[in-house]
Image (cartoon, rainbow, N blue to C red; front, side, top):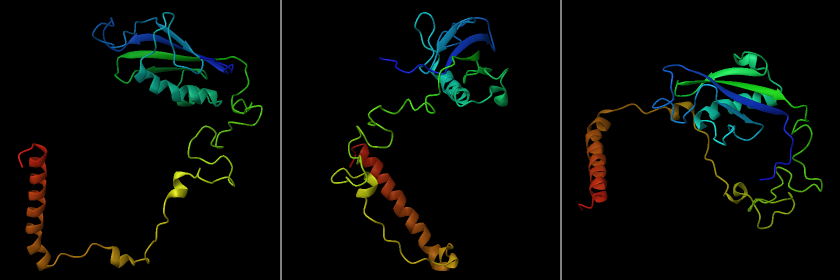
Length: 198
């Protein structure tokens, strides 16, 4: 791995309590203990021993991290301060406190860090993506999936009355049980085929 961009924020995730009980055994699958601390910038949080944060909890924390990165205020999402919020894991067991620390670096997108100095590998140019044209005029065999699809011929528009479900008449009612019986027989035959009985 080669981390080449200095991130804007550093995040700390601390285990601050349990909702029930006082020990982690047979309670938290990841083994979280009160006082455990995880840190990260853009990658997933790890503790001092190199173990990662609970993956289910990370699903909750990532949107909060993105809110901070985009200049948001966590107080608007029920946080303790602009850069801090307490969350409970999805299993309702462990309480975590997320804290962000600004590092003073330039924003990834506003700073244009995704741009290659030579102008290659820009998002959307199809570089490195097989089957996608790099230039709009250079389609050739590198057409996209959408361009390969045949055009759909649409029929004439129908009136609202024509789209309404037809009313049941006497004949339809008499045919109904036969249609249902046929469907059940087809379903039963398919199940028996799967079991190898036919």
